[in-house]
Length: 211
Image 1 (cartoon, rainbow, N blue to C red):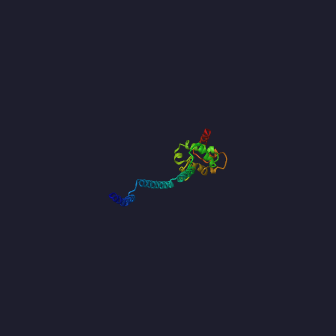
Image 2: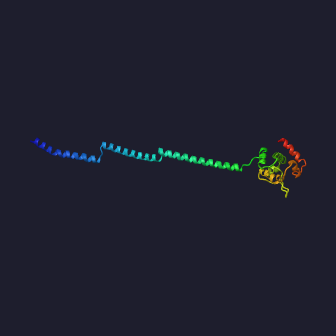
Image 3: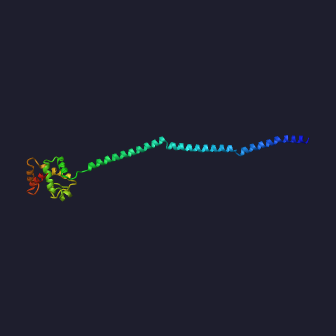
């Protein structure tokens, strides 16, 4: 009889205990995550972090991606090409300016070419005159005044001063030879008293033999 009563009490209390235990497990599971839940949370966090990294990498790829790298390379090459073209154009401009401003050096071949270029008659005789007048281009009048033919101003008696020796070649034609009307040129030089030295034409001929 006593055993029967104990059994009955146990049967009555059992559902309450199970219910309480089930309630405790359920409540704890809601508040405290299980190991599986912890692992799941870790995976979620990892996925979220990797997702952010992927987005950042995708942004970086958009900024410096293969296509953009190609564009940047093209832009760089275009800039270099433009700079190169600009340099070439500047160089051409400088070369043109130099060629325009460049004047020939005083040498016998250059002087002879300049005499012919100005349409002066008897260029070898005139060349010999320049050599004689300047002492082979060493006189002070030649060096300081660029005057190759001893040309003087009839009003002042002073030597003409030129900016470059080529100007004196042109002046020889406009101030001397324009008067020539024909005949023996050496005799004509004596007639117009080109030089005070009576042996002037003889000295010119001597230089002609050296040329």
